[in-house]
Length: 74
Image (cartoon, rainbow, N blue to C red; front, side):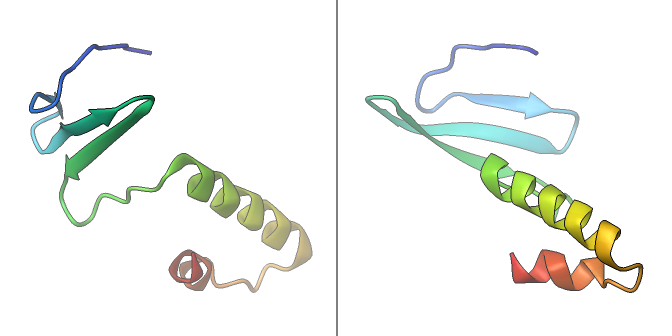
């Protein structure tokens, strides 16, 4: 894991096409803005974990689950 210190107005680049901007810092909260291609899926951590858990449940219940529909519902 890479740990960086940034201030509002600064940014981090990932590869050639993803930029993470530090928009604001207030107390313990950091507001970020992410510029990425539309085909890159970006989820908050808790949403991503919920998707993984739902996928595990669905895989154990039935093989006829439409995972695309599950992603749209989140």
